[in-house]
Image 1 (cartoon, helix red, strand yellow):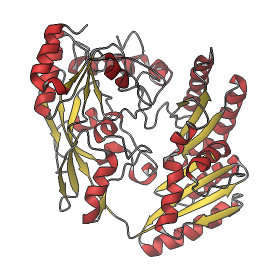
Image 2 (image 1 turned 180 degrees about the vertical axis):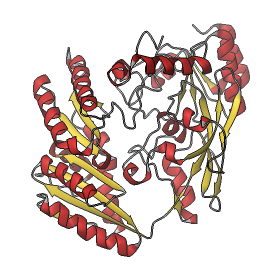
Image 3 (image 1 turned 135 degrees about the vertical axis):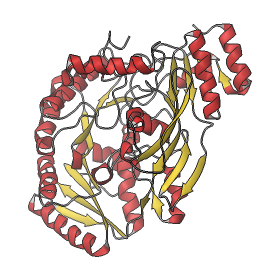
Length: 462
């Protein structure tokens, strides 16, 4: 419970406009892109690292839980204040402080939208590689906290591969700087430790990001299949030929029809699956690989292969993929997005298992995923207003994630653990590993005030 004294201290620090406490305002901060809910007692809006540190010190003195929030687009409950307390929203910290083409990096505040970094770097011939589907809205601070990725992870890696340095506020209110523009600095990799820590070790306020050169040529192909298994075989065959596309995305028939109806991207409504394949690099290499990929897809059963003939056609194909999650809302009032990973060779068998789970629980499950690295996103459609459907959706999700782990994969590729997957952590990690993780968290946060109830299963997360 936040006392009147603590509230006055927050208002004195940030001003009345920097603090929200009316119920109708707090309702907007009780959810993210997952299915869970938790209402904060207060929302504050710092404008700098110094103000963020002052907020944390006030919270620490009064024993108030602290949860960081970017745009609220997360899919595992990471920004949900499970135990009330104060939400630190980084909406006002949205400045791009520097774009340094010579050093191939940018320095941004936590509230900067992902796509804005590429927009700022574009005139210099650079871009920021991690591209979550929500990149127009999601913030860099949230991307770093969750170690997000996106469609181009196959070639470029996840967010951690593009973070050079951080400024963060620790649970004791100390503001620290890790890493920097210089690569491979000596000492412990604290930047790597904080990246992906989901707000449990520190509040990330400023980030130094690695920028990439724009490629000479980009070519996007759409392969159309009458069988999801044929699409899955194609993925394995492309990688077996030592071809690494920058993106290799798959949608099943259920998903592509929802996306096409919403975006009119040009996907065939009668297909059972599609692969969206993107190649980039030197012109000669891309042209040669595009022909090889076309031959591979046809040999694996593709009924048709289309090549985008212009930047506009390419953007339209990607519009369907980037807006797919939003398209589901036109069909189902609620849905749960999962984030399991399996070896590429297990994609086809995993899709068959997901279909079995769908039939078992009587729920529609559509599939859209980063096929190149086996990161699946089964979308479980349900109506939360119908008694028992949320519970069925949770049970179906748990079965799918357990299968992914048993197949040699993981329970999360890019969405984080949050509160959604924490009870499955013992399926993947030993008791000793979880205990060590708890000790690291306690070392940073002895009071357990930073994003409590996340990552570790109860009672370890208590």
